[in-house]
Length: 209
Image (tube, rainbow, N blue to C red; front, side, top):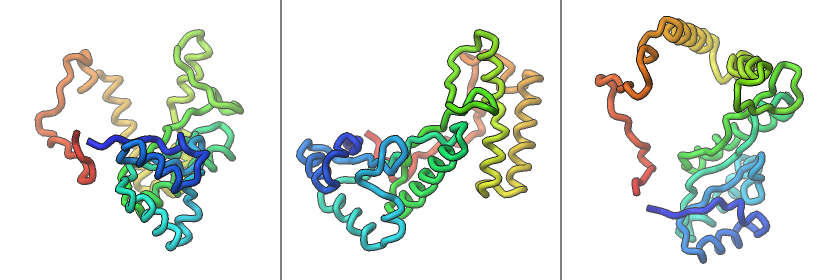
């Protein structure tokens, strides 16, 4: 088992000084921020993706200290009601994915996002109870996800055929829920997985404790 730290805790230190501090603490792994709320003090995706020499130096700084990158982190809000903020945070997420591939990092940590309460909202709204009634109305609007899905389709994350397939599958799920079909036909404690399903496999890079 490896012990690691969120390197953002040492954002006040230069990158290699932060790595030395992490080694001195006896740790083995680092989770590194790439932007949005964690910041990019130690890792700027635009720089590393556009400069092979800088990318190599970044990786070597970690490797020669015997550390591994456990994850890249870019917690943001791609569902923010402000289109500017949503687009900015989603762009950081995409760049982080590309950087993770180049660094052979198998984990990217982010937030799914929090939308506003209605189409005219200016700030995110995290509804935690369906009462009073206007909260229930906001929850219903948030869970439809139509605007988010359209944004993803427009951004090219889904082809037209894939979008049609996703919508068709969604309609099947709604029909199953409304008709109380499996697995919605009995209480959750009684649920069991389909015995024909294969046993999930962990990723090759993951080392169990």
